[in-house]
Amino acid sequence: MNWKPKKHDLLGLLPGHLVLTRTREEAVRYLSFDDGPEPAHTPKLLDTLAKHGVKASFFLVGEKIERHPEIVQRLVDEGHMIGNHSYSHWSFRNMNLAKQLDEVYRTDALLNRFDERPHHRMRPPHGYVGAQLLAHFARQRRSLVYWSYDSLDYQDRPVETLISRLRDDPPAAGDIVLMHDDSDKAAEALDVLLPEWLAQGMRFAALPGNAS
Image (cartoon, rainbow, N blue to C red; front, side):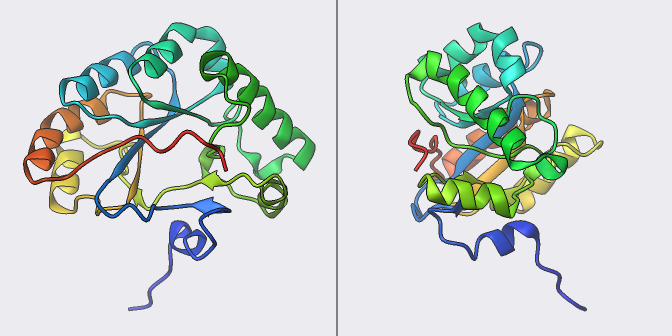
């Protein structure tokens, strides 16, 4: 059988200061959530993380930051990392570099109101990492954040299927785990799995907030 490398495997060959797919901190796993804040789902997820004493990283959409600042403030108050997931969440694939950068810096400015950081960790929408944006970030000494473990929580399958898959093949130490807070699947799965994983000695943390 021919093995076809996944995109995160290929990006993982690049230096971590350009694209971060996993960390060297072998004792910790990093849960990360895309596409929020969502008032119907993010608070429930935050309740679940607080219940189990776990910090995580949230890559937020600028338009939603403007609509739901109270959720962003709660993220900061509870010790989670807030990151940049573009302003509109449209794919960067068909945008020129100027438009991509407008999406990035517009969202950085919104996030700055909450944590006073000039720049934030950036995960491009839909996982599209183009050469021009990568080169710009390299010149600015900023890194893009990808992932090494895709939970597949966006698939149209029952949450029980998600729980079984994550239980049978859990993230490894150092993994950055891709999840989403635009549904309740992540919260429901983690409410079951976090007690098991923590009992097994797994540790979880938010990614450091610095963008370089």
